[in-house]
Length: 304
Ligand code: NAP
Image (cartoon, rainbow, N blue to C red; front, side, top):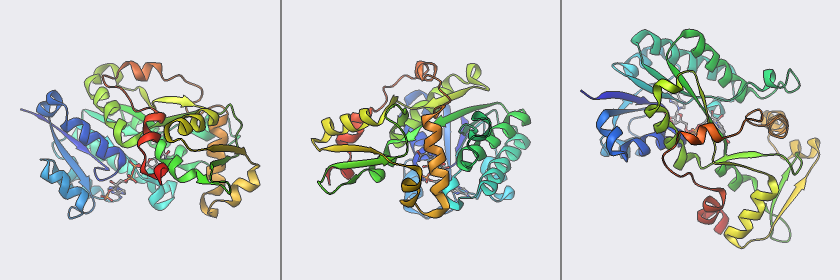
């Protein structure tokens, strides 16, 4: 009898990528039935999945009762929480804990959680205002303490962020202004194409990856490398400005300005993944990942 994998965030980037990759794998799609979770089963993204044979179940991570129905009979669960919907770490942590509690109750055999590092702890208290990282790390710790068999997938810096961050300057050159120096290393990922490749590999290597962190990025790129490859892929001029912290914050809405500042200072030092290389995480993969140059070359945002 086939096992059941339940995917949170099925209508979004990460969960959607997991489902796409599982459906396209002839072996795993025989081994697992897929259940996708959304709060609104009537939305087009959910309906599209239903047409592909995915069981669509309504649940809200704020409600343990609805999570019970979502996790019924589940062998494996992919869990992603969305900090930015509330921009409130308490809410994100509670949602993660709710799913973890129910996963434990119903005996889930493998919980794959989309996590991030704890910035406050990794920097020994130098940077304390990155709650979208710290909250996920708290959920990771809660899952570890609960004893549920689990693996932690840590997505890198979305390539799609750059489509919003890079803006044409006065001379038309695509301009990126950040408060970090030219040696900062951004671990980039095409989140929609490649999350599922990592998660599929985590499922295949379950026993050796229990308790492990898998770093979800294609490669590390400095700002100069990002702009150089963008130029090569699109033929457009680019330029990078290192700006001071106050100027950087003035470009952002107040509720996220300090958080994004410290997020980038963390990327500069000690690094998004605390300086760890990507080699171990790449060794489990069977498919090639999308490079930044490939992504930039096919991005409609940069063609405009
Ligand atoms: P996304 O595309 O924004 O979609 C969010 C998904 O979460 C939707 O499928 C939504 O489902 C579901 N969802 C939200 N609240 C829910 C709730 N209360 N109950 C059930 N489902 C709920 O998400 P994503 O881009 O895959 O992931 C977002 C996360 O990535 C954020 O937490 C962010 O911090 C993290 N992240 C971002 C970056 C980056 O560089 N941007 C890097 C690393 C990590 P419905 O709306 O259909 O219910």
